[in-house]
Length: 382
Ligand code: CAA
Ligand code: FAD
Image (cartoon, rainbow, N blue to C red; front, side):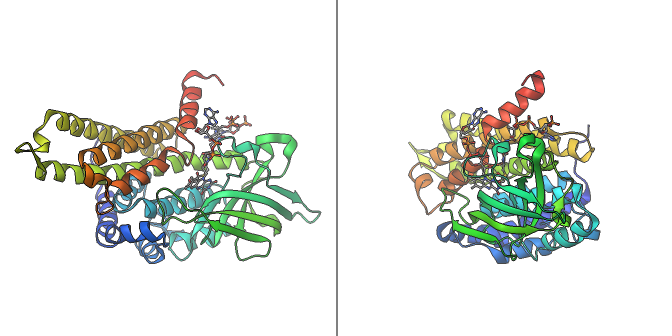
């Protein structure tokens, strides 16, 4: 077993770290306070290959592997959680599915624009009445005699929905078939029949814009189908396996930023005549934070490694996402506690890390859904 990274992986990590520390982290407080979408920074990430890390160079990407994706995501998330949400949707949820299931024309048209940072992508599975229970969707695509489809329905909580040019949409084409009646479509948001709702005000990752979207007699051509008719749910699940590696990496980045700030604070802050880092109760917290951070990173790298081998990695991705998101919640909570009143203050980033970490336990499958996936894989029972 080799725990070292390649030169290319380290180079990409370095590029991501530089942009995160020089451009993203300094404006994170502003983006969190105002909720302003960080378009310039997203373009900069795109220009540096960070919006299509696993996308081959022929489609405008960096042509790197899943390990490089983990390393880069961790760095960007350590700079700001919201930026890493936008990055993760573009990389994992948008580009991944099209690369695996798209036609050559779809790859050229949609992947290139997102990978080069010229446009922003989105992934629309959730609906107002169906989140965890994704097959209970009602958005309907009705096939016409000429092979085209007419789409009607709503999707909720769509990350980058307010700004996306293209969306991977999942809609029911044959409700009698349940999961096997779902089809994936490529949506152009400039076409008639596509509407956006208000941007959601959120607890954390506030600069990542999220909204409801609605389709009213949206016309999708036969060539807008991604993969085959009826295969949409499997496409969504496969894409989410990859997405969960991204969210695990995001959780690690947010947690690492909180941990590093804490290390500095416990050395400087004095109480009862000593640095608070000399108290055994603080030391126990520091040791537990470090163990959880390293465990999360190793499990996430394992999931990325299995993905890179071309094997099924659903279980490894769910284990990584569950472990990393719960570690991030615990670590950011302890980081606030160790900072005392300053942990609660908006003058320091600790309270933001704490708010940003929470989303990693909810989206791309809640912690309960990760446990369900892991237990089903482990027991073979349903
Ligand atoms: N890969 C490929 N196929 C898969 C799969 C996977 N990982 N998981 C399931 N499938 C297949 C099954 O084999 C089955 O196929 P057959 O019909 O051929 O048997 C089919 O999909 C249906 O599977 P299940 O019966 O297991 O489906 P289920 O209804 O029990 O649901 C679930 C399973 C794991 C709970 C799933 O619904 C799920 O993951 N829910 C959470 C939804 C989610 O993560 N949403 C995220 C939205 S995107 C987002 O959140 C983005 C963001 O924040 C930035
Ligand atoms: P529900 O499914 O209603 O769950 C409510 C509670 O019940 C949860 O605690 C859940 O774990 C629990 N529960 C449900 N089923 C079970 C079960 N079988 N066993 C045990 N417990 C269960 N979706 C997209 O499609 N695209 C996006 O880009 C996107 N971005 C998002 C961004 C944000 C900021 C947020 C908050 C959400 C986003 N989502 C997106 C939606 C997200 O994936 C869902 O919120 C999530 O999957 C949970 O669904 P729900 O909110 O409907 O909760």
